[in-house]
Amino acid sequence: MSVVAERPQVAVAHLKFARMGPRKLRRVADAIRGRSVREALVLLQFAGVFASEPLEKLLKSAVANAENNHNMSSDGLFITKITSTADRAAGSQTPRSARARTRQLQRKRMSHVTIAVGQRREASAA
Image (cartoon, rainbow, N blue to C red):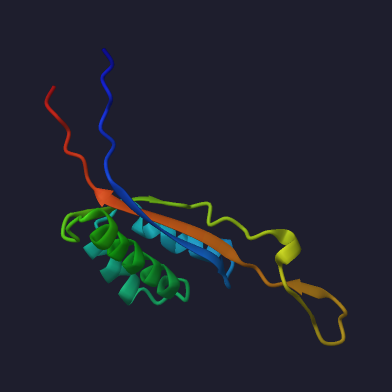
């Protein structure tokens, strides 16, 4: 007889090839990690950081996925996982542009981000 632990339902949204550096995205991602969706949306809306706009759209997309695909209520959702490794996009696909007169190539960084939202599990009094 095997006892299978019930997994909490999680809705996921991905953002690939965002046209900004991973360090800038990671800074905002660290600020909203573990918060409720409502708190995170308010924080992203009033943050004066360029990276907050794509993360806000991504979070809204994850909430819509939770409502439509998993029949979850948006009221009790929390950010269960957000990749702080806003992974650097593949180096071979990094566009480069030449600076005037210096003949030095500038790398134009891109990032990947994944957000997962779900219900927070209550600690059971075993």
